[in-house]
Length: 493
Image (cartoon, rainbow, N blue to C red; front, side, top):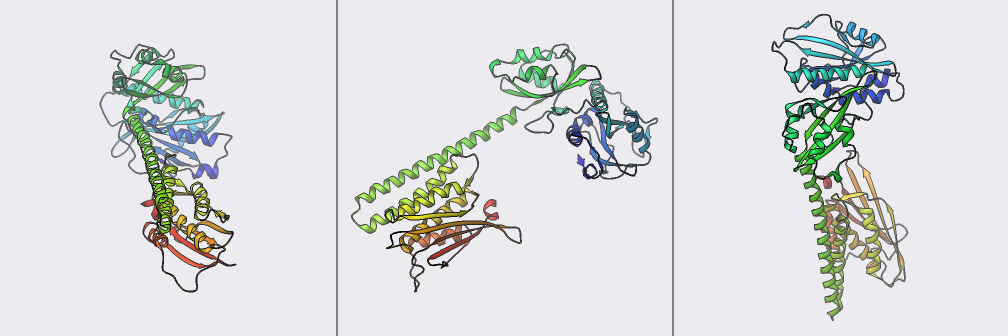
């Protein structure tokens, strides 16, 4: 289905809700094309008196009569008089003779869509008449349903703003199954697919001549779980959707009331077996729950490892050994914090600002609990992929620890700053710049050999984050470390 909406914005003089009503029509008119076994075209007037095609729907129940796309083009001269007549009369107009082309014979109808007494657009229906076979009962019923809906359009009764359109979560379509009801909710006709759908639910009798509400009620085992909209849908009173489940089969139902100027004279009920769709949705929910549980268990295991390291460090007599175990414990705790965050959400992304707020302050306090080091954070990290968040959290932990232990060593206090800035480069690639700075003694005059912590930092930045890292003097005294990395590559991993 093709749609062209610029003329609506440029030339329409609509009242409240008119444009939304037309878009609702286009969103639901595949239903009419399938029922009518015909191509539908939506025509909108231009200031010069001509019309432009806003949308085109091809039927899935028959072959199309238009093999080329004409959306956005002006109306043909031989079709405009029929559309003009429908626009002015506000009633369905039929061509006086069959339109013959080199390949097909077509019957054309023009249906004005009227709202609040104003014609908003005209739909033309193009039906192929080249087949010589007699139409089946299904085809005759479908065409009558299409006519009823189109006539409701001329009265401003369809589409209804309460009507759910689109294919969200398995919306029924004409080919899935159609049931026509009378005003009392008794089944007048059920398509073969509609009959099959209810047989899968457990109803083995003929649907025709029986109230659909009684049929569905008899199939429900646990009536406490029934959707409150079900009675209004199966009687055709409201244009809503609902679902019923029986014997492991889930059936999605959608009702479309049929009305004229005076009363409701029937309804269409579309039905679709969505058992497989719901099964897959449950698998996804189960998968999400399993992933969260895995992250939770990993977090618990890492916290157990950190506790074991803490117990081991208490038995160490060497200060160097105690320090090594304490550093290992901090690194394990940082990874555990990332998994704790992942265990609380449904996605594999981490709200890094929430995570790092806790980690940043904790890293400074653990590195030197007696110094009273202040921490300040600026900027926003945003959401980051989990495989990106873990190494970045480790890098920040190591750099903050290094700033406190070396930059602020021997001082009663000091400040460590952490800033983040997301940028958009000229090639539209998004990057993240992270800066850790302190107001300590600054960089040494002569380069010193890197310890294990800085070796870990450099390895993680280059291999895991695919970024760069640079040390420089901080303006005003102290040291600052800047890390820059691209985010687009991280999302693709």
